[in-house]
Length: 576
Image 1 (spheres, rainbow, N blue to C red):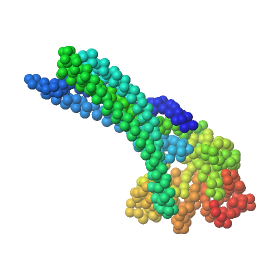
Image 2: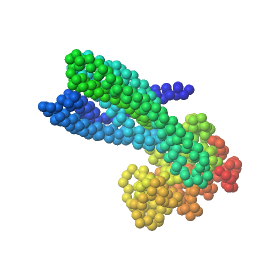
Image 3: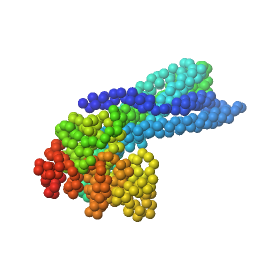
Image 4: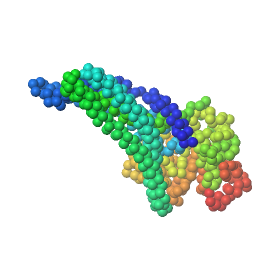
C-alpha cells in the first residue's frame, strides 16, 4: 500500500515541476549571460594551466611565467565576480514571481484545501520552498556548463597526449553511475526531510502557541511525549540525509587519489621514453583535475536538482491545484429573496454532518439556528458562505440555484460577525475599512464606529483611528474587537448578515454594548445567527433547531416551542 501511495505521489513529478516554470516569465537573458560567462571563465582557467605547471616544476627563470599566471588568475576572478551579478538578479526575480503566484493560489484556494493544508504548511511553501526554484535552474546551467568544461578540457588534454586522455572515460562512467544513484536517493530523502521538517515545524508552531493552556491543563508530560515523537521524525530524516552525505564524500574523495596514481604511474613511462616532458605531464594532471572538477560536481548538481525537485513537488501540487471558480452564470442583480435548503446532505470525508436537511431562511427576518454542539450549525454557515458545496440537494436564492451565482458577488452581499473577530495588525481605520472597494473618509468610518458602539473608545485613544490594534487585535478587549468587526460590516453594508456566537466570551458590560450594536446592524437585514445566548434567540422571528445533523423543528418561536425538546431544554438553561 505504501509503495503504491509513493508511486501515485511521484507520478507526473517532472510535468508538475515544469508547469511551475511555464507559468512564470523567466529572465532567460540573465541565465544566458550566466552560462556564457561560465564558459569564458573555463577558457581563461585553461589558458593559465601551462603557467601553473611551469611554476610547479620550478621552470620560472628567464620568462614572465609568474606575471602571466597572476594576470590570468585575476582575469578569472573578475569574470567570476561579474557572472554573479545576473545570477543574483535572476534568483530574486524568480523567487518574487513564484511567491506572488503562490499568494494568488492561497487567496483563490478552496476552503476545503486550505483546511487540509493548514496555515503553517502554506507559510512554509511561500517563505521556504520558493528558495528552491532557483536551485533547479542553477543546477541545469551548472550541469551543462560542467559537461562543456569537461569536453573543452579533454580537447586540451588530447593535444598534449592522446594516449593518456582515455583515463577520463572510466572516471566519467564511474561518476555518472554514482550521480544517478545519489540523485535518486536525494529526491526521496529531500521529500521525506521536507515532510518531517514541516510536520515538526507545524507541531511547535501550534503547541508552543498554546503553552498557557498546556500549563493550565497540567499536560506537560503529554506534550513532551508528542514533542519527542515530532522531533524523532525529523531526526530520522536527518539521519537519512547524513548517510547520503557520507556516500557523496566517499565518491569525491576516492577519485582524486585514483587519478593521481593512474596519471603519474602511466605517465612516468612516457616521460622516460621522451614522448612527454615532466612539465607537460604535470599540465596533463592539472587539466585532468579541471575535467574531473567539472564532472565531479555533476553528482552534487544532480543531487541538488533532485533535492530541489523533491521540495518543489509540494509547490507544484499547490500551483497545480484548482482555484475557486468565482464567475458563474449570473450575478446578484436580482431582488433579495429567501434562502432555501432543499434536502441538503454534507460530509467531511466519511463523517456525515448534515443529512437531508430542508428549511427556509426568510428574507428580512431574523433567523436563529440553535442546537447542541456538533449538530451541524457551523457547517450550515459554511454552506451558506459557499466555502463548501453540498454532497446532495440544492441551496436556492429565490428560484435560483446559488451555484449559478457568482461567488464573489454572493459573498459581498453577506456580512460576518464571528465569535472571535479577526482583526489585522494595522490601524483601526484599516480594519474598519477592510473589504470596502472604494475610497472612504474618516467621517464615514467614524459614523460606522458610532453605529457599532465603538466611537467613544476610539476617541479616547490618543491615536484615534491610527491606533495599531496589534496581532489579531491583541491590544483591544474582546468587546472592542467585536465592535470593530461590527463597524466593518456596517461599512460593507451587506443585505444578509451571519452572526456566529457574536456575543460569547464577554463580560456583562461588553456583551450589552455589543448586543446593542448588533441590533442596530440587524435592522432591515436578513440575519442568520448561531447563538447559545437565549436572550438573542428571543429576538428571532424564525428559529431552526438542529439535532444530530437533522432539522428537529423550524418556524416561529411559538411553533418551535411546541415541537422541539432540544429548544425547550436550551431555553431552560440546558447544556448546548
